[in-house]
Amino acid sequence: MVVNPKKSSEEEEKEKEKEEKEEGKNDKPSMQGWRVLIADDSDMNTKLLTRKFSAGPFKELGWQIETATTGEEALEMIEASRRSGGDEGSGEAETNRRSKFDIVVFDEHMEPFGKLLGTEATRILREKDSEVLIVGFTGNCAVEDQERSKESGQDLFWSKPAPPSEAALTAIEKALAERRGRNKKKEKGEGKWKGLNGGEGGGGGEENVPTVRGRSSRIVPSG
Image 1: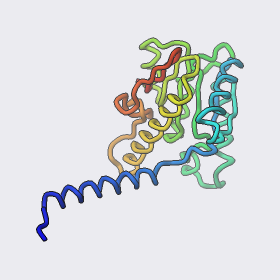
Image 2 (image 1 turned 90 degrees about the vertical axis):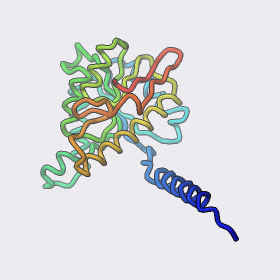
Image 3 (image 1 turned 90 degrees about the horizontal axis):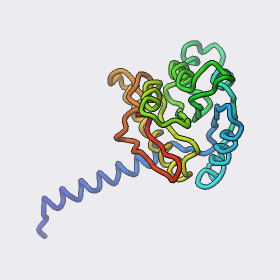
Image 4 (image 1 turned 60 degrees about the vertical axis):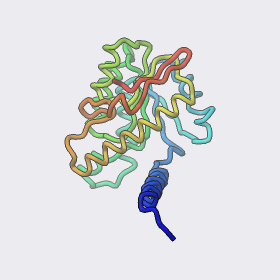
């Protein structure tokens, strides 16, 4: 029997690609039972996002949603959650461990109820947590607003009202994959860590999380 070396090589390459895809699927983190924090001074916006994260494609994920009305309150809740989830006496390791919250949504403008803007609260959180996903939520979509989101370290930038559920979930999945990839590089010592936005302590790059447009809202990758 005559064996075609070229064909054999191509088949091996396809098998390798298939195995890598399967490994990627197995490595994909589950979003089941995520703990979500929504920080917004508007009761209407909070209810809107809560409904969004509890219905449609999010319903089967069973996300646990908590709320705050200021950036200060949100940071206090995150810190309390982080401390209660770790072992006492772990020192610096505990300080840098992942927050029990998996995703935080910051309204970019929460005055006059709080002194911290969403981007300012993000910078403070990023000093301690490089894994939690952070979404900026705002009624302003000017270029300067997106730049501030990028520089603060937010993973996604959503305009109000909330984006379509399918688009939102897809953007979150891509942002999560990108953040995990960059954190793995950091663990391997491959350069200074940067998040999805390309800013200090922020996110990665717009090319990896494309703009998603809806009828009245859009999702952009903070950059």
